[in-house]
Image 1 (cartoon, helix red, strand yellow):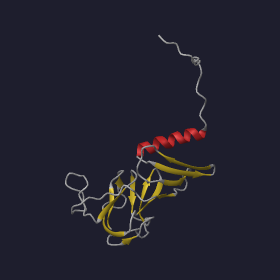
Image 2 (image 1 turned 90 degrees about the vertical axis):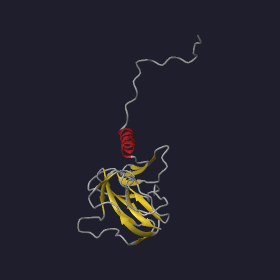
Image 3 (image 1 turned 30 degrees about the vertical axis):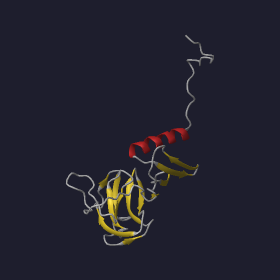
Image 4 (image 1 turned 45 degrees about the horizontal axis):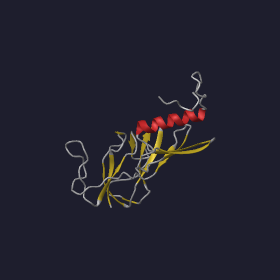
Length: 182
């Protein structure tokens, strides 16, 4: 049996107490994992922090104040998880999965679990309508997640073929929101 040359650590040593900042970051990590968010940027009066989870390939990010009153609008980068596949129907198939799309069409998925809103308020004009031409970076809708209003932008120029979700309806992470013809 080999003996280690390292001195044994005292068994009664307790970990140092965590600062409020470390506790807040741990909460952010936990929430990111729970909601499937791979990247987030937070800013408050104390500073700014940008967090990217290892192994996440998407580019969705959130920029929002840490405080929550009134509910701020967060900016969501274009969802890089846009889906395309060769075929013909832009709707969901009978099995509940994603149907195939023509090669000139892409889906814009929800980067969050939340509530889908077509406009900034109940009496406001919708950000986007079927048949409308949109530009890359143009706001298409809002997904409210954890009391933050996240603007979802188009990842590419094109024409909105279909809006797949009704206003005020809950959406899942990765659920298709729009079909855009590019």
